[in-house]
View (cartoon, helix red, strand yellow):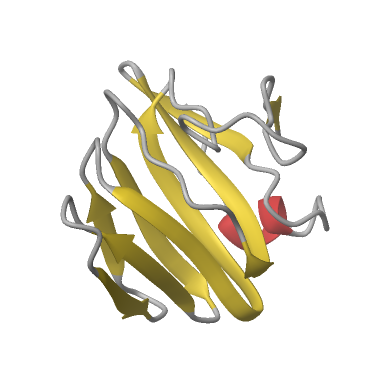
Amino acid sequence: MKTVNLAQKLSQFTEHYSPRIVGELNDFHVKLVKLKGEFVWHHHDAEDELFMVIHGELRMKIRDAEGQEREETIHPGEFIIIPHGVEHLPYAPEETHIMLIEPATTLNTGNIHNERTVETLERI
């Protein structure tokens, strides 16, 4: 058991959209990630995701089953939970730092495999 300092952990990397594991809780990973710009539309078949903003502003585009899109803006100290199966696209106009809490099986790009897919996450 150790106290985790989020600022110290975030200072250890600069890459965007490349999550780092900073803790484990049962079968869940606690991850830190830096975002800037747009990610990709994707969904997760079996995993819900919690996105908590530490610094900056996260905008989350969400597409419902009928194809209608809406957008949520998440500020520091706020979080959003994206249920499994819901198509979403995170983006950040400026560098944003977030904490993710999600099942250890969660792939960052969900049902999409592309150049942004990170199969093996680094632990810091």
